[in-house]
Image (cartoon, rainbow, N blue to C red):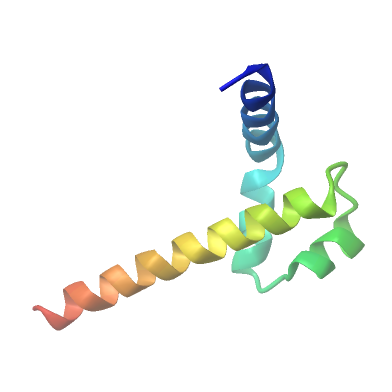
Length: 74
């Protein structure tokens, strides 16, 4: 792991800190990556927004599946 790895990780962290909450909120409201890019003009790349959307959607799906599994066991 070199300096480039650290810089990439730091950039992802700062983008998520600055914009992640807002993007997750928009995803919860039904917005897609394309809608977020088109309507909100965040100063980060489309790829960064898409990564946040995909990761959050995946995380939310896992959480929902875990809750459903817990409800079946009760």
